[in-house]
Length: 224
Length: 120
Image (cartoon, rainbow over all chains, first blue to last red; front, top):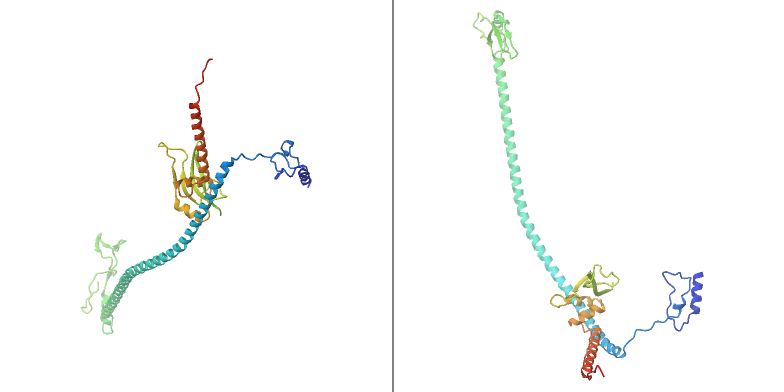
């Protein structure tokens, strides 16, 4: 508040008729210090103006301002008018563009639809073919199964013929008793049998031992 | 926004070059403008021409949008005929005329004067 009072006191010393605007803001000096004596009552001299020139300038400036104002009004009106017409034109063009785009889109959709349907047909066909193939494969497998079963049945029937009945019983007993089996052979890892240094039966599937003698009776055939 | 059409000075020392620019009045001189409307090269080229490029169409638009014009820009465009001739151009012409008159009257006065004798 000290500063404000000093400022007010400065103003009271000034001649208010001559001074119009006096700002107590100086970047180098603080506000509390008074204005220097030299600068206190300084009044600026107005720039020299030639009265003839001044009059001419006034006239020219008035004419110029009037013309410029009219031009500005013209441009404003023009802009407003263009804005409305342009807006309408833009709307129309937008609608047209939208319709064009729509038709293009529809055409494209139809094209892709064709491709899609083609692909789907092909896929269906392939799937069906696949199914048929699988069916055939299944049937083949069943047939093979049946064959296998038949084979088994056949084998069993065959081996059934060799079963010992009460009829064959005594003959079989006699045959078995008369049979002599020779186990005096060497065998290697592969199942080859050697007798006296020579190969006897190279077939590894033969499991039964070597039979030496034929039985005396002719009723039951020999099994090798 | 207060648009104004004015010059933005580019170039370098002793070689100014102006862009005629529509920009915000509060913006710095060379800031990115709303729109560039032309160029002005104040130094004459090899053919003695001072070249100015102006986009009148866009100036119409911006004046219609309420843009001000700086004094120098108005003077320049006034010389082209798009705007009326600026009072300052008339003033400059008037002063030049006065100078010419003064110069010619001095010459006449100098020619009409009797020759001054050196020794007496």
